[in-house]
Length: 206
Image (cartoon, rainbow, N blue to C red; front, side):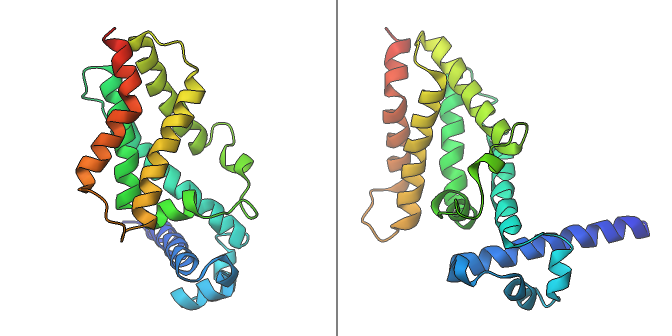
């Protein structure tokens, strides 16, 4: 490995260390206690070093959200590729959404369950060509395929947002209320997906 490669690897490692430290502080103590100084103390670097990687703490929050979306895009792109029908591909993608949220609760909570609107603008996250834009495009494509296959004329964006809301509700409840006497988790998730897509299944069999 060359010196340049080692330097680049070190830079990427430190950048990830900064994001991980920020995530830990944010989840444990809240946004009010997140600062460049606190992050620097946690990773044992000077605050000046943090500013070499991020403009301010809001920039860190933005990149925490983007990091989650990048991971989701990778997972969703692979979901359902081996399924024989558009409906099953869509279902596999929705299941991947739920599984991602439950397996990555810290990232999910920051991106989808914390009110970061005062610090990270939705417009910046949804910038055309950005990862969120690509993620929505992927999900809408899966929805569009399933709607065509079922002969439904429902609006693609509305169906996507409705299904997203259903999946988010499941994930956020399971993360936020772990002590509730839920039924067996696998059965709960599968039943939720069945009910969310029942109208499409009925349409296909008409």
